[in-house]
Length: 217
Length: 226
Image 1: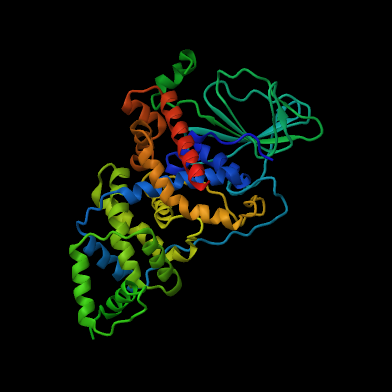
Image 2: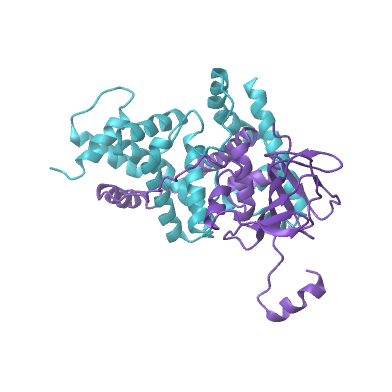
């Protein structure tokens, strides 16, 4: 049973289409595991429908537009056909859309972080975030991997606990730099998480990039 | 033979779907189309649902024309805002959205959502793809790892059907400052931090308004369902 859900403000941005791709990977992967948040999402999407409904229709050029669309339909112009994915039920640890991102990166490739912990960076088209998988050995502390900004962690396997709560498969933890805690993977099973963090700002100027560490930004 | 005959017959069939009468006179049909061109089309939810199933089940292009005349201008206003006023691109994207509605009509499930909500999600995905040039990661109900909804009881389905009207009522009772942030997010495509900048508010205030708005909407819907 999932106990830690997505924040409404993140779900709302996902519904509106304004959430960056990196966060959306984690949001959509949580949604795959959480019927309760999917139900909240459909309420939010109906807010989008409400705004479409309440828009005053400007009738200019509607007929021309219809005639040209009709011509396309008559000419048999088809929409792009989306190929059906080949699914293997072998490993259900990674729900869609995460699975597709892992496959696009050439499958699971763990890089050791020391003390048995490992990570895999997940490439996305989004430069504002960093997305990675983390594997924390059972009973070990979660390694430090972010020093500033917001961080979203989605548990995929095993569980981890801090002073207050336990997070198991499907649970989401939102943290920012004000949160001081040292979570530990629970004994018995290695813990696999998806972690999304804000990417450090990248400056176009070489000079700014050079002094960035000194400015602490 | 008039090239537009199939369109007009189809349109009449849709117009008269409730009466189950298929008129044979084509001149009457031509006049009807003429009238439509002059008057804005506004359809109620029940009618939209009937037209959507006519498109899905029998590829009824006349029914689709009515849907097009209702939704295209609305989707176009959405796209005008999303493209920051690029009307030519907005028209192209709104047409593309409606093309997808035509092709995907069979995937629309009226027991799960309003047609306008479904069309909003198609327009939104089109916007992310063509305006933001980004991917929209989405879950997949056919994925073996997907956790399906628990059994939906029949009375819950009825609640869902009522919830569209209930949501409309809830939205109109929402205080201005809550409706404003929702609108800026959904219909102007602004991120929460941009909304904060535009309204000269701390980001935390915008986020808490969004959370409160979500909470109020859910409470209003639950109260109606009781």
